[in-house]
Image (cartoon, rainbow, N blue to C red; front, top):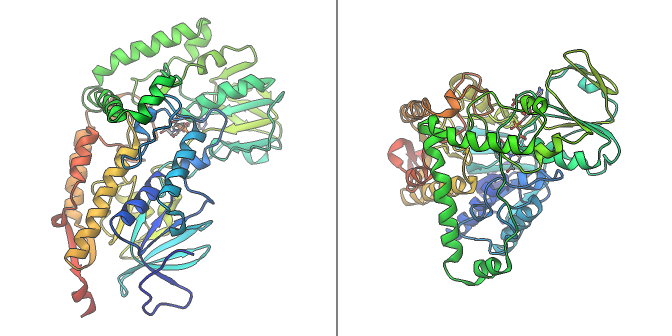
Length: 504
Ligand code: N01
């Protein structure tokens, strides 16, 4: 069981800790390691799965791989010198995450199979009460690291519950199901679907791809590293750092087109159009899969085998929309009924409306979902939210990226949290809560910066936007600006009460 300190009087069975970290994907695991490196032992990581890895543990569909270059996809404190290719497949990333957990001997700080049911601020005790499937915890601080892409979104399609064949979400792949020789439908054409489709197309007798919006697809410049490169990454001092810097800089230039002046996305659009022309010769199919919005407005996808798969004789792209699903068929809006044995639901995740928000109750007992419903998913530096004292969010509001590695953003946020803990200790702070006026100003600035971005002006609807039409998911600047903002915990932005005052 995890190491637990601070055993002052608590309700029987409640485990009292300094910090509860929720989730052990890249964010939670990284936070745990960095807290431990900072000399803290008074924390525990609650993880609902049975292993570390988060989204990389859960997304095991055939073809799952990263669309961010490998060199950017590791912690800076634990560079992976073993990547086999320029874009890594899921098993390799998951192995890397597991190896980091082992190297830093952090697994024994975890409670696995621990489903967090509610997180409530107790104003009288100035602590968070955390109810879980493995008992109750009480913590001075909570670091919520549940991730933005963790709760599968299922489509609200008439009759889908009555389907009698195999049906599963892309993030919950059913490895017992054998799709060979079957008639299969894939719903969705996002990042997950375009990796799944080529794999299923190889084995299915028929594959219907239900496309609501055609995505932009760019070439995937992916290759295996040569023996010389592998040697250099492993043995030549500075080689990997330099490679990492080069990839990082190249990616950052995209920010200009994405966030500042969408007109600069045009050349990338030409590249994607050329890719489409090269890969699909049938003008009817090409017309069907040509996007109708500015590239970058939704996540830009990369693939070399998606369009060829769509061109296969056993594959059909259906653009008429889905009217209903019956016991054994998908019926399109034009009335066409296509019988299928299996449906793969690749419809994404609850991002701005995550059910996890419903279980976090802040200072006034208000669920985070209610707070976000009122003001939108807003926070301060993506990490703290007014009304939720002593709580830190990793991959919180406006920390997502359309162009580079989330690991960089996560590490920036972890810097902020670790420095916050330092400041809290130094000044003997009991509670810390971001000031509402500071948060409001911060968000007004964010929305103003986002107003000229392709995500707001590109003519598409995407999961980046919330129900109010605000972009509450993406960071609008260069990532090094975010790194700079989160370097130091800025106490001045917070209302604080000292431990002495709380005890009085
Ligand atoms: O999900 P998505 P995803 N009826 O939300 C369609 C990361 N990721 O799992 O565009 C019919 O992007 C929806 O249509 P539309 C990455 O950040 C990374 O693919 O809304 N269709 C869309 O086509 C990514 O952005 C990697 O009109 C419906 C699709 O389903 C994020 O995860 C790999 C529908 C959903 O696309 C999510 O990607 C995979 C409905 N009712 C994921 N509802 C890599 O690194 C939704 N759709 C490679």
